[in-house]
Length: 304
Image 1 (cartoon, rainbow, N blue to C red):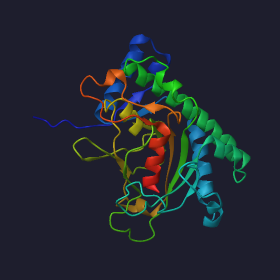
Image 2 (image 1 turned 135 degrees about the vertical axis):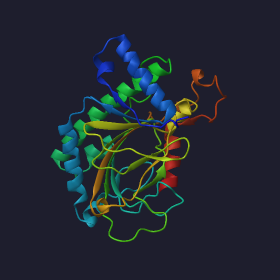
Image 3 (image 1 turned 30 degrees about the horizontal axis):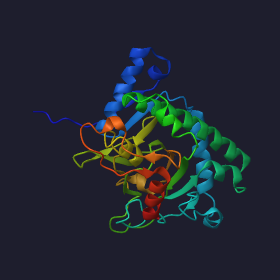
Image 4 (image 1 turned 90 degrees about the vertical axis):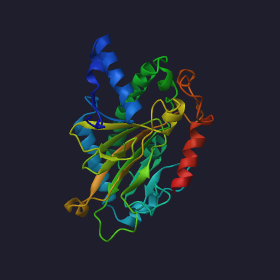
């Protein structure tokens, strides 16, 4: 018997956005299956222009090229704000291992609008990108609702206060031998509902249900989408939040920078995340109810 090979599917959003009912349902079915089986999928024809994505990468590279003392002036301070610069090894996505070999800039709408350190061009570009990401995540939330036989607007209405986080990430070239167990981004699952990931190079690995690590390579003009912990809790593990990591390359890529951009779609802070009524037919509710904000704070406290 041939062993089935788990793959991360590539899903075209265009039929859902502009197709007939049968075409829309086909997209819903594919997303539903991906969220059941692996919790990751690629999307193409999302509506976000490649030019806008490249502009954000450009501004990201400009920021991370600044001197450390300049970046430190807007350092990340605490979980409640979750915005600002995070230096190399400051964060441990896997709390059992040494700090991650990456630096990051966490942004929310308030930080983008109020921080005088950012140029007008930077703010304009990032705000346009933020709006485009919200539009895409709203489409995916609509698809999730249809897959779960909920009112189409159910998830969208629970994400309409813009409690999201945009994260610019830089994985510097490796200058010395890493510590035992140290990687670029430790093994972890994401905290919120949905993550959109834009990457400029290979490196992301996704853990399958049988414990194997599956490469998630860069596909031009695509976005990697994964479901997070809160969506897993909401759906009683009908949709899975899958662990993933960014390993240290074993070839010449270890000598060059890697950049990525993550948009973390998070429910409104006061939303109660409890098992949906139609997600407990196969097993009783696994998780106790918790507010979206309380869950996020608990995970951030463990990470920093």
